[in-house]
Length: 84
Image 1 (cartoon, rainbow, N blue to C red):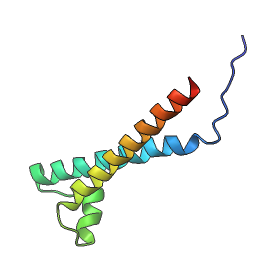
Image 2: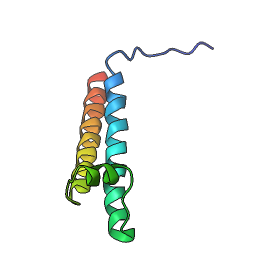
Image 3: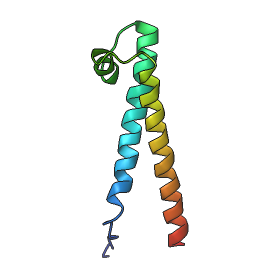
């Protein structure tokens, strides 16, 4: 039985939205929680502290990731409707 593969030329950007959104959300919110709970910074939080960004910068990174995830979900839903 042969399997058909969809052409995904324009969809590669969609996967990057999901990926970067997830990375930024986990790093941003995770760093904020880690810094608040254990008073230690690593990952994005460590880089932001080295750049003298205030502690709320972690939350901005998390919200940027959440916004990318929302955009990816919106684009996924729109493409699904267009294909139907």
